[in-house]
Image 1 (cartoon, rainbow, N blue to C red):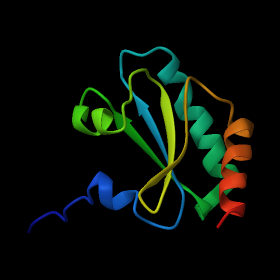
Image 2 (cartoon, rainbow, N blue to C red):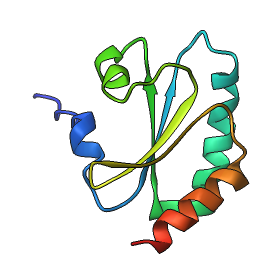
Image 3 (cartoon, rainbow, N blue to C red):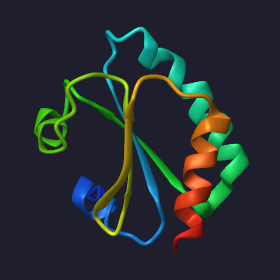
Image 4 (tube, helix red, strand yellow):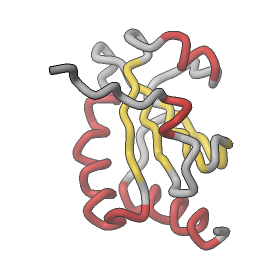
Length: 106
């Protein structure tokens, strides 16, 4: 029995639903603060957004494509386009404010 193929990163960011991507690394201290923040954000926003975590050390080509030079870097994609990006840790309410604005543009 074969396991289903995981969709590629490119396929995941092509949808009409905003995708928040957390580019991070295991060795990055501030990156370790993001999982509880992203969990809180997902609880507040539900299925209106998707959240992905990309390890820059395991996915250097993806990080290079989007010129991620520091971690954590947060990028919001929709329909394959970058709509917003910021480096550094942000609070869940700050991220929700950004994403609410993006959702209203739909």
